[in-house]
Amino acid sequence: MFARRHPFLFFLLAFTALVGGTLVSLSLIFILGFGLPRLDLGPKVGVIEISGAITEAEDTLARLKAFREDDTVRAIVIRINSPGGAVSPSQEIYSEIRKTIPTKKVIASMGSVAASGGYYLAAAANGIVANPGTITGSIGVIMGYTDLQEVFRKIGLTPVVIKSGAFKDMGSPLREMTPEERAILQGFVDQIHGQFVQAVAEGRNMDSAAVAPLADGRIYSGQEALELGLVDRLGNLSDAIAWAGSLGGIEGEPEVIYAREKTGAFLKLSLIHI
Image (cartoon, rainbow, N blue to C red; front, top):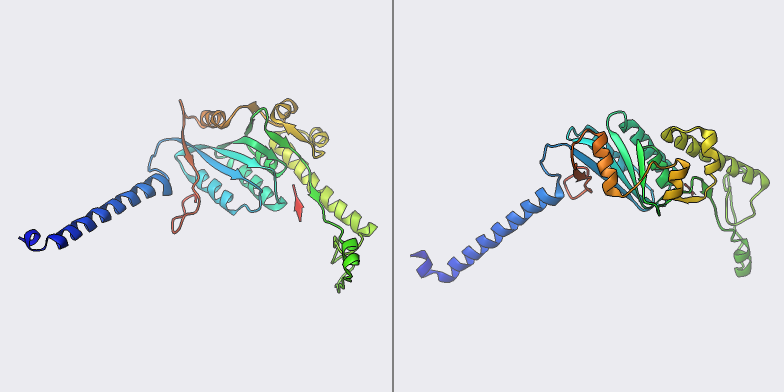
């Protein structure tokens, strides 16, 4: 009766119900399939990806902690595609990996490049897998700036600096560096470099004296790094996952779960350079 008296209104209501149901279904599929980890309680290998310059540590620390506390995750793979970055976040992630390995095995998988700070992170793991052509190594520290004095002279600008101490504007591009300032900065770089060497020695179970000759800033291929003891195996991400699964006691091909990015209201896994 209603459909015969109001055919257009009936069609509009039916169409709205159909569209609404479709949107709800798609939303549930997206949330369950992409936005949140699958509700599978079987043993897994967790993969955390670190790409680009290392400028912060918070997200990686949270993902490591989440995998460490997840009973279904038996081992972790850190997938690294990074040329390095800032010192502090690299050290924070290194420390969190070292905190994790007594509980769960961690394998580092090197992509195209895992150098400097990228290698710093890898050295913390139980084992390292690299491709033969991976760019790695670059164990060193760098600090630099551009001297702009001549540019300022040519355009007629005279810098004026008021400072509270002799070294407050140390490293200024507006004047020549003094010998005292150079000595201070060189000492600082040497100290950070020593920390880097010690971290590699600890993570790789090597003597610092054996690491030091390799830590002059040069890069190595994955093949060279294997021969020098800086990596353990040659292989790709799948090989690293299989190794991690084996160390975690998973029989056969392990199921893999990737750490999620932060998305909306859901949070579930969500200068000087090295």
